[in-house]
Every structure is written in C-alpha cells, then in structure tokens.
Amino acid sequence: MQKPYSLLRNNKQSGPYSLEELLHLNLKPFDLVWVEGRSGGWSYPTEIDALKHHVAEAPKKEEKKLVAEKKDDFVIPPLHVLHFSVSLI
Image (cartoon, rainbow, N blue to C red):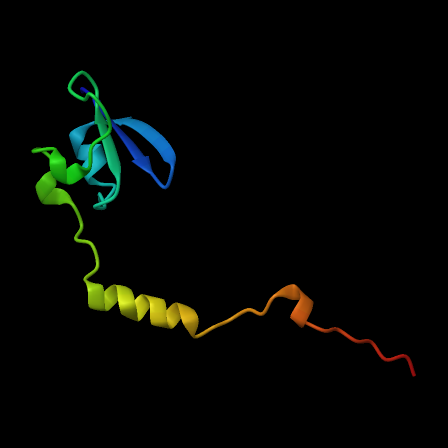
C-alpha cells in the first residue's frame, strides 16, 4: 500500500499515511498536507482534489463568537491578585 501523505497539524508532523488512513484522521480546514512526489510545498486539504470533499467544515462566525463568549465566562486572575493567608491560633 502506497503512503504518500504527511500531515502537519498543530505544528506536529505525522505520517506517512495512505489516503484511507489520512481520511480517518478527520481532516480540518487548517491542517496542512504534503503529497510525496506531487507537492512543491504543504497544501490545505481543500486544495488537493482527492481530499477536498473530506474536510470538516470550519465553524461559522456565530459559532466562533459563541465559543469565545463561553471562554470568557471563566476568568483566572493573575497570580499577584490571588492572596493566601494562614492563621496560626
């Protein structure tokens, strides 16, 4: 089985993969893929004919905003704001 694909996701390279193996990794729009012997550089999966129909959709603007709002619900203060005290009785 030929394994011409390498994947760059979250600044970590993995592979080589066959097409079937690569598709099982649930490609994301901002993953980068190298095709051995056919790539002059890394490409987004949507730029490669064999992969473009297998890429998970990026979240819509409304979904991104909702994620950002949820993220802001919990705030951790800087360490210099946290005070710890111990009472000796």
